[in-house]
Image 1 (cartoon, helix red, strand yellow):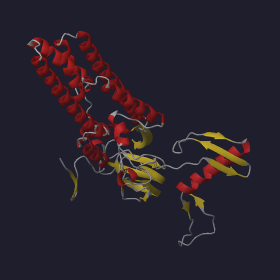
Image 2: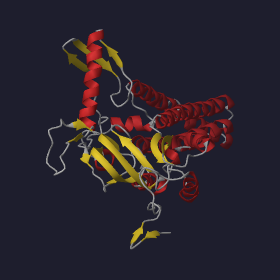
Image 3: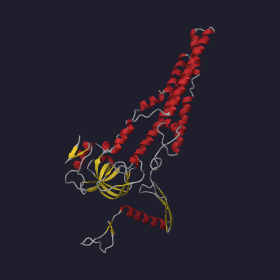
Image 4: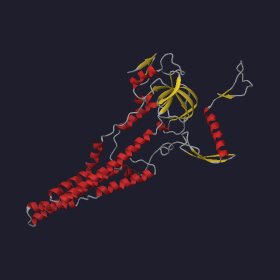
Length: 395
């Protein structure tokens, strides 16, 4: 469905402001409710999670596990129930271990998503209020300042020294200047300045949602470890069955009964299956994942540990891809002494360590730097438009 205003068509999921609405007023409560019912919440599409029983079943029924299940069944057929139960226990314990290891990584990943900023300042019913970013609707008037994440696609109505960090979309770490009348994409950051914007698209209609949909459609190829394990399992299976068949024929040739020769062949086949290889591989990958977690790298899939180790070249962009694309002050020098600052750099909180006089001077310096980077200077003029003798003042 398209909504039109005048001669210009508006893409689906985008609206133009109602007639007579001003920046000072914003949307009314009734209009917000109607738009939310029409466009839904301002949230990105999430990948549909597989049920836990499917993920657990995948750990118990992959190619290597199937070979061990077959060996367990053959052990029971050959009259070796102890060996059959032992092999089955190895498969189950290994599958449960891998399942819980990856489930823990999934929970950690979910907690990381919760750390993203979720509140935004808007103008509604003539008042400035703070709402959850998921409650935004097209037409909302949003107030932004340096360090804020743009919560949805919008058009800048007012922009004072605004530059936007669009590295998540373009890969370029240099902030891009933006002025009134230009567009801003949801998910990007305001690197400097203050702005007022009108939301044009939310949720699944944003540019970021289009990228998210593309990533969820991609099917991951099998990992190098998975391909190598399949190759090894095929070789082991062929060798075990071939040797078992050979011993079966030899047993018949030396005069053993058919039943005895068959059981002997099964025993040889099962003995050639390396039951300890599967838990060895899983424990090795789990240890690698633990070591990477201590270096603040989250591994959601155990096989990804080996995939990184088998990488020969990594072709990537510079700042913002391998780094956080953020800079922060770690030490401030003042005439009263040096001040050490420990914090993320993009948050209003930090641990400050230094002499009391130096801390106070650093606070004044920070206030001045903020005013210099975000403020405007208004030049007073006379009635004829010429600059007056009145000193310039911040606006």
